[in-house]
Length: 125
Image (cartoon, rainbow, N blue to C red):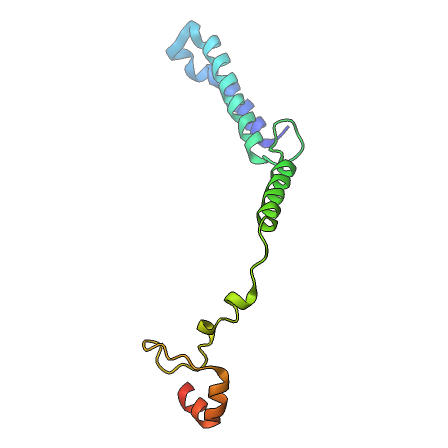
């Protein structure tokens, strides 16, 4: 018997002595109702503690992941792959050793090689 059930059983077995002065003859039905509610919350809490698994009340994680993977693969393969020449090697991406980013000075790597090592070192300093 788990610790929660033991403490709940002890608490609920002492409940009639605590509420008899107030409820008199309604003590037995009230104790039955409160016990049902209390153990219902206890069982619901145990179910919530571990929602993944293969019991009948568990979330079917295999189904969810299978659907997610299938949908992602379908989305990835539904269009042709982009041409890297259009975005990776575009002239706008050649911003090597730019001195002034506000002026957006775009200089190709070949031009920097022509300027020489000292020009590159001065720009980086």
